Length: 166
Length: 109
Image (cartoon, rainbow over all chains, first blue to last red; front, side, top):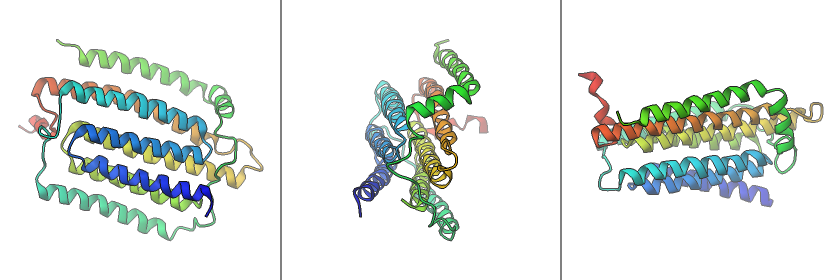
């Protein structure tokens, strides 16, 4: 088992455990911090797959900007584990069973799929480097790129309109 | 790594997100679980892109690059979605002084 496999299993276990802790933490601030751990683990997976641009963007945009936004909103509302709304126990059990049933169905459907021979290439391949992605983004995908800037502009206007005190 | 490990990892993360959406009542935690599901899908897309590169990369050196561009656009849309969603949640908190989603059943009456 090489270092790549060890890192794969380590990052996978870290991602899954932190994702479970996101869901079960009572204090919302702890949930945000565990979600940052999940994003760091997923960025590690991107680096293992040699998608370096996406790894950095994932760290900056998700673990940086979006999680700071979540944390900021939590601090603004002054929430803690005492004000955390509690669902009744049967609804919680039903939710966990529903999620587990979905997992069971997906795993059962994919277990027999003939994918053992398909390998995701790790450590090599240069399609994830910023040079190639930039060439594709500004040649073939320049129209969606410009449209996404319009989307951001409308999101900014929408946030200001929604957040305004009337 | 064989692709099915990535598939099972992404499916597990996605189902944890689904269970979180179903079990929690805090609106922001529900929102965070939606982000978790988006990230599971992104991870699977990148893994598939490297799988396609491994299959046909010798013939087409640009194979699989579309999936990574697609992940980039998913991140763009997710950032816009988070900003608008958090603004909606802050407005809801300002009106009801709670972020419990069960308070949002006024359309029922």
